[in-house]
Length: 345
Length: 198
Image (cartoon, rainbow over all chains, first blue to last red; front, side, top):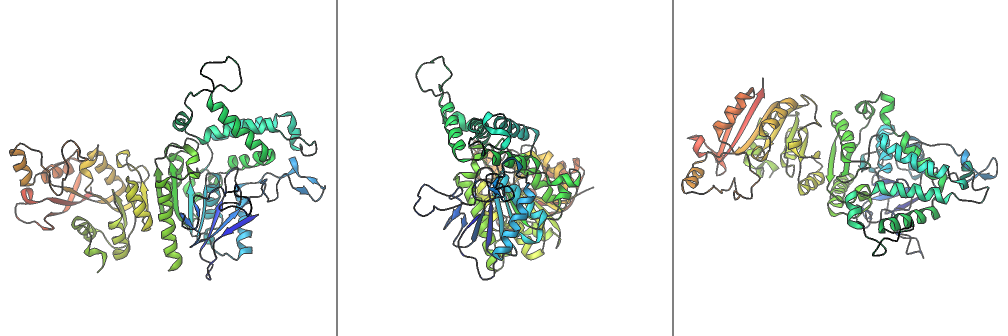
């Protein structure tokens, strides 16, 4: 599935691909007709007059293979069996997604993207574009990213997957047939994920030790506001997200390591890249902290590539890439201004 | 008019010392004016390092390769001898570890260029004789609110360069927007040095 915003110019040179991260979709900006609550996940970034200005750029949002928001995924019916794929849906990788996105570009008649952009896992796809299809991407915008997951990153993913897979309602991934949903597992997965998206500072600011009641109630129900928040996030997520998709996307994250093919040498891995880069990181992001983005920047410099790196002092942790922060948006806007000049030239 | 007309006087001198089509690293690159000038007029390729959010955004808008980082954290992102020329313009006096940054400059490039306000300017001495810290066009800060923690004179810099094994290959000094030839140690407001690592 995909959505687009703005107009493709006659030269087909103003197209921007937005890649999504863990729980988003092709619905990047705007609202769907008759549903004012359906605001796109990056609406503060993409739209008329926004940093990625759809008055100038033709912006494409894509939903990745394996997702639960429209593209073929574990919930889809396997034509061979007539039943949902469930556990039999193949594990896919970031590279696979990029290969599907290239087919989309072919269908849209876009020979070369003016930019491919994403945050977190989305940035990994943008980065992979520069390696897999160097001639088809002019600019790579990689925000809050890493060249590969750390042991700690993988560990958090494994906790989330274990929560899902050990839920009795999971049924080895074939819960559709049992008309169940491993909601308890999904809830825990989302809670643990959510903790890693926020900074300690941000949590302290938002919740501190604020309590529901003035005094301790000496029970295990919600006492602290942070508990209420996490449970709310977990409950909401378990209502709309597919457990198999969660497994699949976290696994794609784990597997992403473009330097694996070059014996861990990221400079060599990025050697084919021809794009220009904007890399941005947030100081309070401890999931993919600035030093992880700097690894990418260092390798690009070593290869003599054009790269700008912004290290944004924002308090919101990993989530900052989705939020409206003036310093962050100013840099992205400035970068797209420079791309717009190239497109016009 | 081309950009060279509007380039700050020390940056113009630095640009004159940079070879065409060379690789340049500009530390504390500000809005990227020098790198943009070198890109347009000398076909140089390069990177700038800058800490200010405002300047980083300006560089990004101009398509300058800017790396947002604190110079006091060193130049770890850059490999040995990666550049032909490394520039530190009007930043040395604000560095915590002035000696360390000069050594790092020597590591990443064969040629270095440094500009700084001359603390030995005669008006500074007058100010000190009058009992006050100098506040001038090139050092426009009150003593209690200044980024300049390592001010030096021409001779101070030359002694440090010699101690660090750097061979000074050029010096240009300026006051009021023009070159100074007579009594530079006292009359120069701004100094630009070029050095090579031995």
